[in-house]
Image 1 (tube, rainbow, N blue to C red):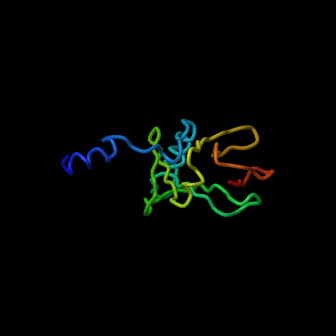
Image 2: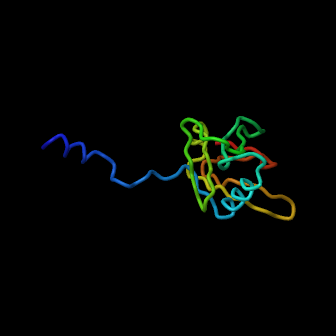
Image 3: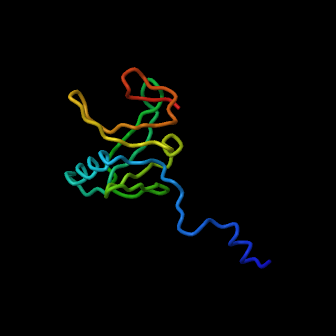
Length: 127
C-alpha cells in the first residue's frame, strides 16, 4: 500500500469540524447582537472566560471582544460571535450560553454540565 493511501486512511474526514466548545441559545445570540450594535467602540462580539473568584472558586466572565486573541475559539450563532478564552475551554465544554430576563434580574447564564456546585448567590461555581 502506498504512503498516500495510509495517510488518507488515518486523516479526518473532509468537511467535518469538531463540536464547538459551547452552544449559544437564540436569546443569547439576540442579546449579543444588541449589545455589539450599541457598543461605544468597535467590537467583534463577546469573550467568555473563567476567573478564579467567588466563594465556590470560579466565576464566568462575559466582556466585549475587540480582537481575536491567540488560540481562541470562535463560536457563531445567528450572526453573534462568542470568543472563548483558551484557558476556559476545559470548564465550558458542552455548556449552553443563554440570556434570561425576569422581573428581578437579567443576564447571560450558563447551563454547564461540568459544574459540581454553585454558591448560594449563584455568582460562582465549582467543577
